[in-house]
Amino acid sequence: MFGEGCVVFAAMATAADGRSDFYTGDKLPQTSIPHGTGTYVYRNKYFTYSGEWVNGVKHGHGTLTMGDGSTYEGDFVDGEITGQGLRTWPDGRSYAGQFNRGEFCGQGIYRGGPGGETYEGEFLDNKRHGEGELVHRNGDVYRGHFDGHKKQGTGATYVCASRVRRCVFVCGPLLVLLLVAVLDWRRCVLSDCVGR
Image (cartoon, rainbow, N blue to C red; front, side):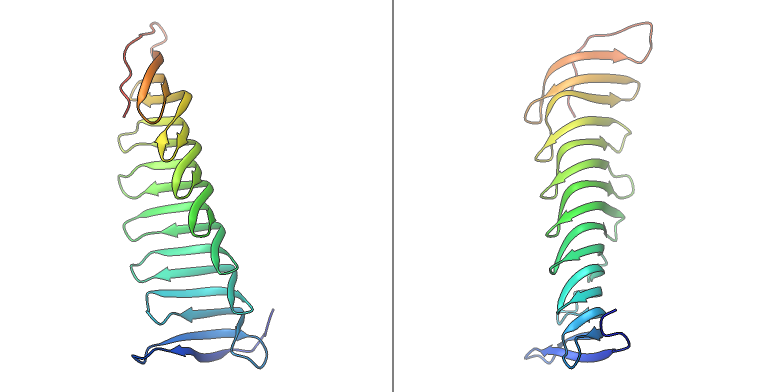
């Protein structure tokens, strides 16, 4: 481990109002540069980072705590939230999955808190994008393709209560019903499918 046994407490910078950034932890020998593991409390007191450092930059595994009670625990690369991680909010919402520069990007699971919707699938720039499954508060499930946070594409399956609906979504709104099949095996019903 870098700087093993070398724990320091140093004010990193002082603002005009007297508030300082503080770091406690390992550092490069004979410097005040964070290197190894340590905790950094930012001047604005809104952010605190505890975790791994390389040459003064957050790099490796760490936890970033925000003043509103939300947290991120996971990978940091060159000071950015990048890689696998878990973001949580005080109201119960959470996202577990891949991040790129602080944005949901790649595979992940977003849970909308108590009574909220859940989405498991692909993300791009904090939006549902690609293949995924969206479970609504009422239990309805949409499995299919998303583009820019909207249902998009062909061959999507929409599950509502006791019906399985196969629909085509273009730019979000439903345009064409391919098949509505009631889960009662004795009959198959064709009707209009209302997009939600």
